[in-house]
Length: 284
Ligand code: NAP
Image 1 (tube, rainbow, N blue to C red):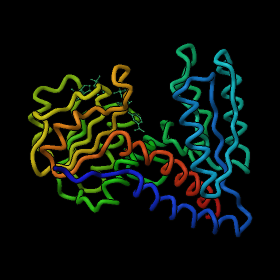
Image 2 (image 1 turned 90 degrees about the vertical axis):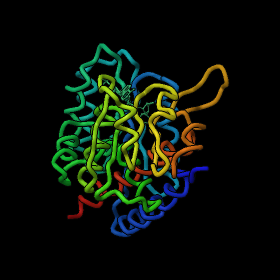
Image 3 (image 1 turned 180 degrees about the vertical axis):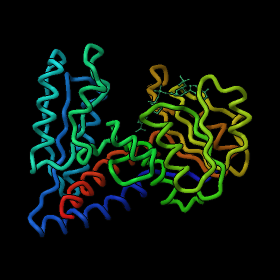
């Protein structure tokens, strides 16, 4: 049986650190504030927004909710984001995505000031992740992978980390963060030949394929740590599952994240930590 890498204790430890930062900022008269901008009322967006607001409230971060109908124009949305970027009382901006297809997401994201991009969504943040500099913020889910590895003291330096998935939100930044921490990072995607064989050679395997339970026994070996980023709702069983076939992983690998209760439990904690950091950077 594998060791279970639960997200909740890692999130609690991160929240405690963030709460200390927030309390020090409040003593200096700064109230860390996150603006959450939502279009329409997709259940995914609403539940992430609710979770983010609750998480922030628990550690003293204020949230400001801004919502628009899905039919909002790109211009109006950009103007709002520019306004929040210029507003000194707002430290972080979360734009819930994906945006409706009619909107030019890349252009709209440019209206978010890089120093307030706590969700790591802008090109500026991705460039900083690529360069390994402190200019922006890593996407929260990719950062959550690192937080989980660190919390459970899983060595990264010198290890072979294989990331399955190359999206800008998860796979690519996760591989970069692992690389910066001294791992030998291999990035696989849907066109990779022999992905299972490559994955089997990994010390750390990060599954972000976006395909339900697509990573099974052929991808594992006994000494591995497997981080499952995936999250899917199985209509038939009415349960959540990940990109990893959990039962297969659990019987083979050294350590694995559960779904739910793994990486997903950490993303809003990372978002709150980034917001506090953005507010603290303002002091410097
Ligand atoms: P995505 O945009 O659909 O990207 C999936 C990636 O996986 C693509 O790069 C795809 O390759 C690659 N891929 C597909 N099959 C593969 C295979 N067999 N081997 C290797 N790579 C394969 O998904 P995403 O936004 O990155 O999200 C990944 C997963 O994380 C999803 O399950 C999503 O629900 C979940 N997620 C969780 C959280 C959280 O907080 N826990 C947050 C965000 C996302 P191509 O590029 O060639 O198509």
